[in-house]
Image 1: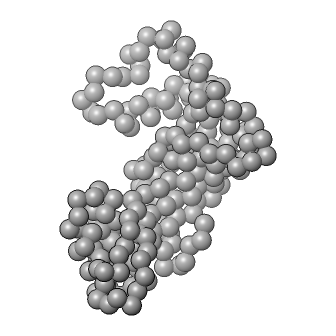
Image 2 (image 1 turned 60 degrees about the horizontal axis):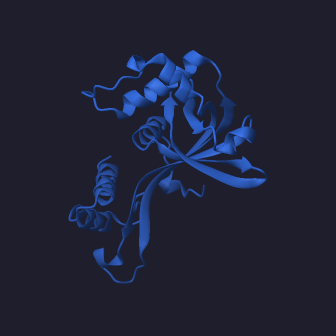
Image 3 (image 1 turned 120 degrees about the horizontal axis):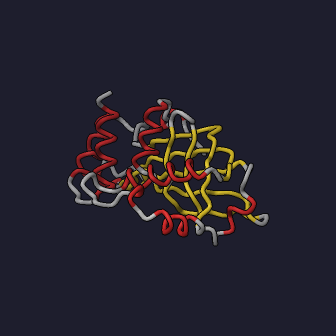
Length: 203
């Protein structure tokens, strides 16, 4: 990923926070000699420096992905930036965004306990705290049948590239104008980008 130095995220914990908050990712590999992508939720295991997830078994990407160097893209908040928000019209439109690229080696998982733990982590992350649904309370025979339809995997992370393009290449006064304009909208991504920009200015 092209990352000018003023947009580069160096802090590993910031990278991890983005991965955990925007966990629905795009997984790229080579399949049948061509680039291939699957959109799926992934769980980060910090202590193992790894990502866990699963393919639908009918998605044949899994058949030749093991031991490949794969790329996973986590897309954070992003939004259009209008030159009309600046103090001058001598400018062009741009886009602010946060993106994390994770590279790693794919490993297909067969250990039943590891499979259950990874699925349970996924459910616990996205179910609300007061949800009555718990994976360990699902009938084992039903769960076993459902598990036959998936191919669980682990990605051992080899490299992370992280970028936050938040108008850092513009004067502070202009960044403030952009933040104000974004905060005056009701769009969630705009508000999230504005919050990140403000946090970056207050460092």
